[in-house]
Image (cartoon, rainbow, N blue to C red; front, side, top):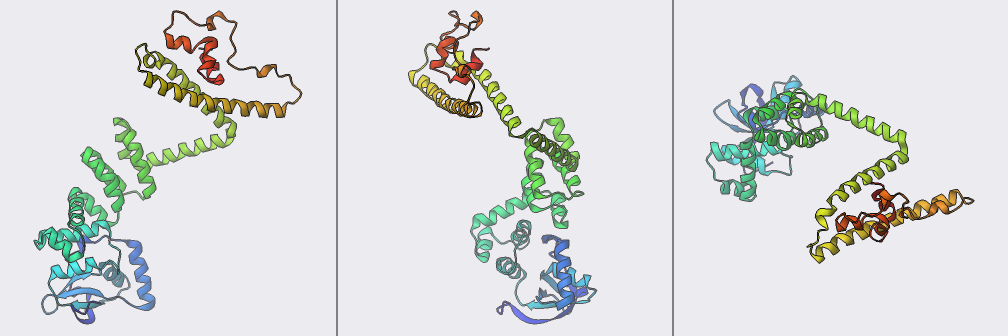
Length: 359
């Protein structure tokens, strides 16, 4: 309670309230229901804040959800603090009282816009009244101006969260206005979580034009299909177990090795800088060490599981092949000769050579 502004506390008939700043508030049905339940049990504990304007007319400054909750309880009056000050001072005062309530980002931006445009206060003056820096005020104003009126109306109705509007819809609308408009309309009819919207935006950024069109037309359907695919992948992974995962990753390594082989002539050319060559070969040696550890682990467990078997099958995988096609090609570029035949064991790890020699 601000004794510097407070004149009196009394019950006021709701029909005498002017809801002039309703457009700066976000409707939260769940919050109204909670407040209505509390008022039914304990009465209205916290007064709304109003300014007198005429004999039986009051401008509602703060307490818009409380007024809706009181109306839901079928009451005709509301307990109010009547302040004596200028409207802009009252708006700034309730906005600065962060300890008494948590403001939504858009609510803050809307009130600051009122102070700036309606009451012609400078950004520095607003910042001083709120105990903030000028950059903070400027950022709120820029945020509000970046959102279309249609999108702001959906936020006010509680159909779309501020997070969804600023982090998902606004970036899409800036890039493709038509997509932003369609997505806005469709999201207002769906109840999607913040997590789902974040997932939607990540996939939208990677999608092609046709996929994006379908996504904004049917966001809930897209997410449903995506979740179904994730569940199918999870079920497949559980069925295959760690063996299936290990095999898939090993095949992916083989795919990467084949790609690296095609890039060898480009990387290891005759005029290459010695420093660049050492860097590449050092990276190769690091990989060789990991392949060596992997092979040792496999052989150790294989030996433990089959103690009576001959050890001939444990010869290095990089041993030379009797197939002439697998022997070094003297006409191949120098780097390829290094990577083929018996000499590869001096550069590549044994398991890596296994794939190289069978190409």
